[in-house]
Amino acid sequence: MITALSVLATVAHADDGARVAVGFARQGDSGMPGLGTGASIGSEEYRASAEFPISSTESRRWSVGLEYGYTHFDYDSVASRNRDLHRIEFPVRVVIDDDEWQLDGLIAPGIATSSNIFKDFLNKGSHEDLYLSGRVEARRPHGKTTWLAGVAYDRSFGDERLYPIAGILIEPGPDVALRIAYPDSAMVWKPSDRYVLSGRVLPAGFEWRVVQDDLSSEFVYRTEGIRSQLTLSHGLWRQLWVDLFVAYEFERRHEFATDGNQPLVSDVDNEWLVGLGFSVGAPFAGVR
Image 1 (cartoon, one colour):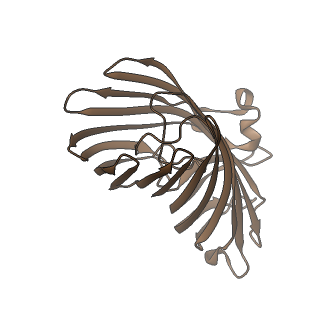
Image 2 (cartoon, helix red, strand yellow):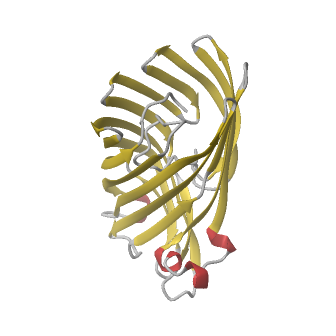
């Protein structure tokens, strides 16, 4: 999904109010067996996101947002310098309700590139750094179960592609919600007004254009993987929350290049991430 890489994002969200979040996560060193003995990679992720409602009626809600992500890859025994990669998106979302159906649509133009281009994008950037993500999901409630189907276009599988969405939402109680769907499943449990526990399994890949520091060559950096994550959100004061995050990534693969622009391709060992974030806004309003 469009927010698949967000370390902070629980599957809970506030449909009727603004939400702002920032956070950090660290992933331990992981072996890269395709690049030789001792080759490994570690990473740090920084995220900031905001969503603001701009129009709301009984049957239609519009919101706009901003999402920024910075990823630092740190290598050992790999013929490449460490990489600093940036991503920024500008999502626009609309939710349309009638008596029998709900339509949830989102479109998000974005920029994804290496640090040397991002910091001087107006002079060094190009159309190759631009991308577009989108999602449309139709839902039909039936008692405590909601059937859903849709289509999405984004980079969460490691390159830009169109893929289907299908599954169900189940709300067995007022404070419990489950999403059983392809490719993004989730759960939320709200044991009290001050605690929310959320879990998620989702594709966690992406793609950036990387330009070498001397601007003489470029390549595409692709990552693939599946992330299972668990987030505990604790209400500190009014609408201020602290989010504690742990995740496990598997089925990982990286494609990038050496400093001399020679291709590097390797599976990456499974590894844990841990993170911390803060958010302002109600963190629980069902499963999206």
